[in-house]
Image (cartoon, rainbow, N blue to C red; front, side, top):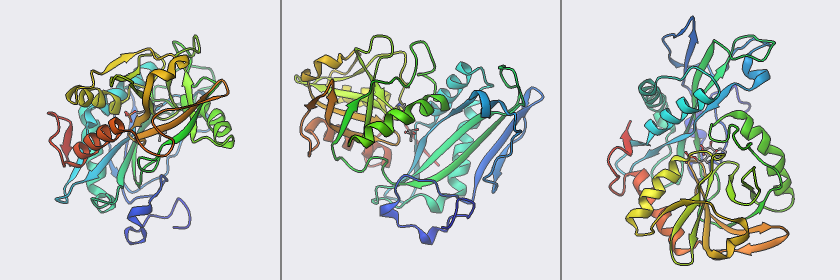
Length: 344
Ligand code: PLP
Ligand code: COI
């Protein structure tokens, strides 16, 4: 692979060492909204977008996106995990950014079409890899004054990935002094600006030797909010699964699913405010999300003090249990609650 315009060849992939990076696959999906309606879209081999130099998205950030994965089952089939929830969240994000929502049923069909067309790139069962799917939508109308676009491009690309954070290895994190989203801002929408604002704090954390940073609530800087690309959970000393309730975090589909799994495992799950000053009450902590899956937080440094949860080198027992349940459901190795898994 020389540059991003060269199509990836399947035989050049090392399935067990994919990393988390972009590879240009044979097929993408593209559809445009103009004259008040979605035009008929479909699969395309074109992986470059063309927009006006004055396109809304380039200047005022009218963009929303999603991230989901396709998993190779033991029997060779391919599963999607709750794609209908991504469809709904993309529509909700679009409404917050005053964009035309993409029809939810068409979203699921388009995702399936992209996976099917690129199916040889879905990593084999047992490699830990999956096909990451990135649907997104941009406002493309040329505008100079700040106003919503009336034209959009909806596009999906897919790329084979390994785990974003590898395996169940605990990592050190630090609480950031920065915010990723404002109180009453766009934190609940999956939109580019939230990620742009997380770049500096994330790099500062990495330069200081941490895996990444954790954000507190932007109003009081008192409660745990989330990571730049994943929600936070903790396990209390008496075994309860807790995860922040906040209006400035992304409503994670992994989180929603783990709340149900935790209920089945008898962990009495609760969405509640978690005070950053009371980390001592947690015996385990982790990050959860599509890319992150479940990644244990080994330590969290806050106000210059390092707080160690279960261990800095080993995942805790509840984290392991949650991880196994989630991954086995996604891979089709464990019965899934109704509607969670869709076959491609
Ligand atoms: N929070 C943020 C900021 C994210 O980017 C993600 C990833 O999508 C998540 C949480 C986890 O969401 P999900 O579980 O739906 O992937
Ligand atoms: C995802 O988990 O899908 C995300 O969008 C997170 C991103 C930081 C890779």
